[in-house]
Length: 370
Image (cartoon, rainbow, N blue to C red; front, top):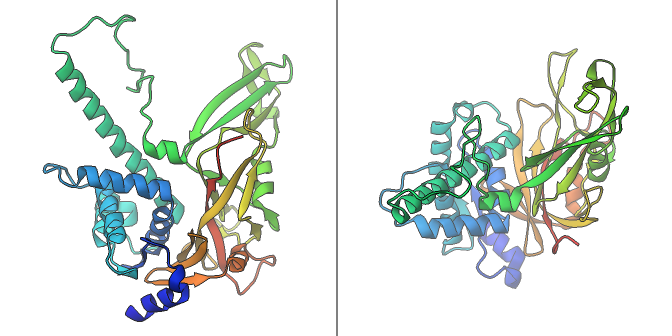
């Protein structure tokens, strides 16, 4: 352990970033899916900063109950406050809590890193929303012992108990973008737009393609006809229509999930697509809704799936920190050349000895939207 730590310290020498910590994570049998995502999130600076702030505010609350977020905050604090610069940490408490809370992650089978990332972010959002609601209720009861008349009448919850004003948490501020789904009736030309939020984008992939072309396909126009016709409210009938998805509001941190695991009907099972998909270090996000013309993003983390099939294999992560690229493989942390990133694009032939493929990409926007 000391040897690998000192090796990394030697490699960085006096370029070792001030106050930064590079720690590998112990693997508890099959927890590489968890380790690789946690490393990517730790090096997502806005996420780390918010979580450490949350930890500092809540660490002395006596009756604070343990949940997945407190375990994660505790782990991040443990890393950032290490006296040594490098080494290995066992994220035991976090993994125990994860397994206790979600039976999906209890088995020793190969897990999906993307499912885990989704679950974790949504869980943190739920916890923050509950806390915000509790604080609001507390504040309301203490500030008004007598019920006041509300100008526009009481707020009526919507059918499924959702209030009209959703709580916006710091997770939303970091990861959430808005998509708009536009459908144009080909008979009366009326455009119906429906907005939906996302914390990550899942993209279909093709052989020898790029993230830019995958995003273009994601936003391409499709025609709804035959049994897929669209019910147009203006025509009051089913009509042929054109539909397309656009990014209305790009997120600060853009998380892209490449759909490498595809269900093949003939085989009756999932297959891993080892397609070569080029992901650039700098990404321009065009075809978004005005006023955002082109937004620039910079790649800072990649969760890589290693293996030829969907039900077995391994996860590692590549992380950019202070202009250096690091390779995290459970307990091991090494420095790698930026040029090595392209070895994780995928394979241009179906059968290749290289099975290390980029699976989840983390991009941070550079500067404010123009």
